[in-house]
Image 1 (cartoon, rainbow, N blue to C red):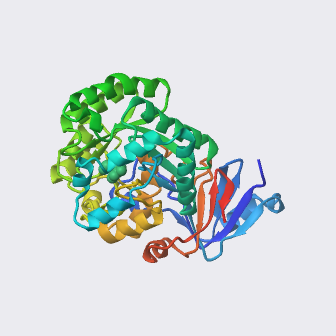
Image 2 (cartoon, rainbow, N blue to C red):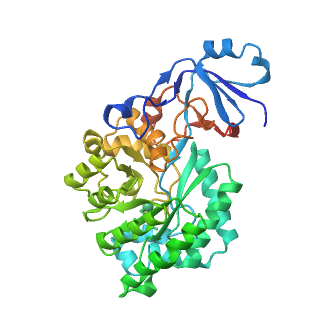
Length: 419
Ligand code: NIG
Ligand code: FE
């Protein structure tokens, strides 16, 4: 292990230290546990001590000269951002579809004509494992440069056993080769592949009988996600797939109520999903059911903006007691971005989250959405030393100066990886 780092004199050290386990709801989302003139000692990959600069100066009086000292005077320091929903490991690019949508085509028109997810599926099937690794590393580097130190990554551009496994193995390799932590999700139910058009139930059976057992046996995923949407998978098919995944130890997630209201939020509550994603068209009843079951709403305001749709009702969800997380949804169709800072800005602007709620949604609650809150998402002794030093003075300024990357330095497991 290298030298310890001692970050001193942070204008605001936002710790988000939790008082009780589980995702934050309502007012607790605004409790950032800020230390002024804050200080952190990072060593052996973890946070060894955290407090005021005076407290740490006393504690480390004998070892002060051993550390690489970072003067954070005038700067905000936060936990590394967590992106709990990405489609990281895909082949190719779809810029022509962006033009087509601006010319009037809808997202579903393009997909039903064999483009959209199907286009990326073709390009992902054609790509070698090495090519997918190479393309994904570029995205991960960009995430890191935007202060993101942990991401979830979904398969779902294979839609056949071989390519779904290829995507998941790519993510396993990336976890070993790149500093960012990657939490894998199986999403064989991202679309019905074109070769199964007209016999969709057979594809559902293939997922349940062939894909899920192998994914589980090879321990390639922790979560199982379904695109429950009109014209994609019905709530009944989604339920079958998610229940089958549970038998193999995979925790459900759902792309729910994105384009049409389709009982997705209700289904998330019924199957005990850890999170429901998108939720642009979620009903009041669905929101209520999620609040009662503690399902995390993983909201994707960059996707809504990119598809020129009205964002999810984030404000109403928080007020109703739903724990809210936010994410880029990084994918080649509906949200080709790696900027979590922009997503935080949009969470405020288009969903009326407060700056404090937005930061909680991008750190601690995001970590809860991928069951990583014991390791990341807040700054506490013993947790991973995943830390961002920002070129702003406080968390309000981070949200206020929008569309700009304010990252100055990033540490991942105690190693300085940016700045
Ligand atoms: O989360 N909505 C479904 N899936 C992705 C988009 C995938 C794509 O267009 O390639 C999403 O937005
Ligand atoms: Fe998505």
